[in-house]
Length: 497
Image (cartoon, rainbow, N blue to C red; front, side):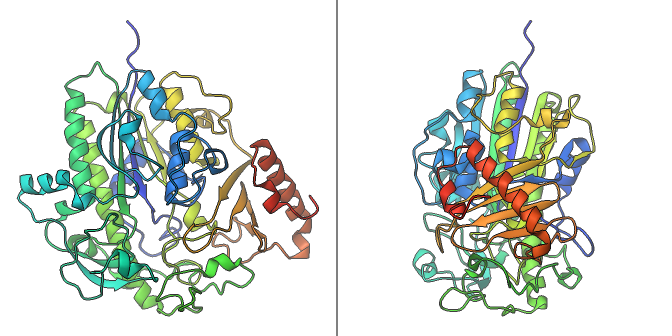
């Protein structure tokens, strides 16, 4: 009898507040479900997104390619899929395919790639769908509404979200997408929040899968959170005393010797021209309140994740299921002078992501791996699990191989800019100790990540580090050449190193 293929459960958060919050001292975001999974499996402590922006990162996750290959550069892009996704390979291998939540990876939805489930085009808004309405009716709960405490805005905010104003006690998002730049509180039953709506759909599907154990399944859930809007319920806010949130390590960064893109932010932390105000217009006490809300939302989404994993376990599916928990990219909140959201820069806050694998009997429990890994490694991992050969043109490596001793010395990341405020690209080389970034039409960046984990000191223009910079530049150029980056000339127009 042929060996039964392993099932796959992939849980992806959006815009995960993660890097260094509470790592050294003070309180950190409570994530009991994620921490339990870490004890049961492997945590990759130096996992990076290939690019810190939803749309291109999600396309890279599906295709195993850099944005310079798949060409879906920005969130608003609808670039056609020009190569197979791992969904194609898994469907051909006989998997039952399910996808729930945010798509935001280009044209169409997961349905066009062989998946059943709840998948919306573009960024999407679950709160305006009939499926959500039916969910609320079945639970006899009101649809989600929110009390707005603080909003961040630019010239487009009022057009997209006309009811988003501070003090509104019953805000509901009725737009085509639900990424409001705001802090607030979800009123009423927590189950009305999108994270519990999605977890309910996933749990129902797991029950169906358990009824057909002979059929391997792939089930992916993409939460819209903890991406802003930060709208937890009071239950989760009460878990945190904001006065115990220690000042973040680069909150007082003056942004001297940093690229211009660091300063491009929304009001009220920026002026009318969109330039970030330094020092921050909010003192640390106010940022503690913002972080309390963001931490609370992180915990709320984590609980929703936990309900899915608990259901998988209770149904007896854990032993033959690879569980993957990760995120598309990070969150710059409160970092580098007091930021909100992200931008056209490659700070550790925006590119570091959690990545945890659990596969009982195959992966050691309570293991931490500090090898350099990234988004592109997930597709080869899934192919490895399904006993499928990885196409030679793909750059990523199976995470199983990484655990067997195949460690990178360096890694290429890239960006084409945020797309909204600017489209200035950059290319970044990560090593075990340093980060070197070439920014389009701006200064280079060089950081010693061991001695300066908050990236306060840009060493790029320091003569003492000239030889190191020269070496890293050569290695970056090699990576751009090796991966056939057509934009290479934007970053090495000077005399080549």
